[in-house]
Image (tube, rainbow, N blue to C red; front, side, top):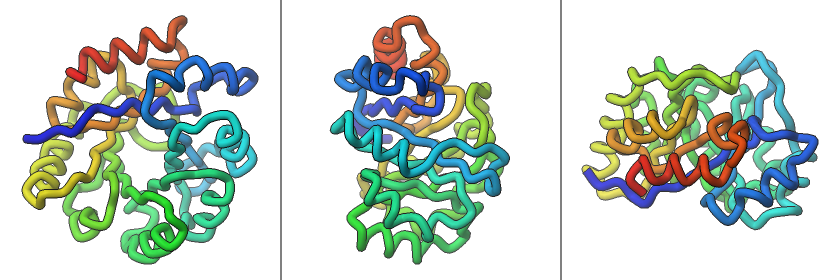
Length: 221
């Protein structure tokens, strides 16, 4: 198994939005990208934030912005996400079982493209599309709510994804999202993940930078 360099992607959903600029400034020299959860109230029951927040974040940091689209109609808004400052988008295979159109549109816009899998969805459902993705996101909680506990039953799926990607000689990242903390990060990286989304474990820690270091160091980075 070949696991690429570890990347930490703090989830802004867990940040203090009254102090969002300060929250980002505190961590931006210690992470590789930012994870922005976009919820529409349809694909998942919650509503989070949209283009104005993305644009505001883009104005204060040069970190790559990965927008995780928990939405039923992601293709409709891809151009708007790009204009707001997104660098990449992640769409759910459960929302669009054939993401070909979304891939093509993202490529035309210069957006990185990833496919997400809910905990119950098999890796086989995205196999036909992985070669055209820059990243695969395996959810380790049910999408739509922050602060959930890590589901270890998704780890065999991470292992399967890593074996498939390595077997095809690809450089595709494998991202894990949900309940990531220093302990679950060890299991995720051991299974083959290399992009770790951490929300509560970072922003709800009294020292977010120390929290990032604990996740990175325990995961073997």
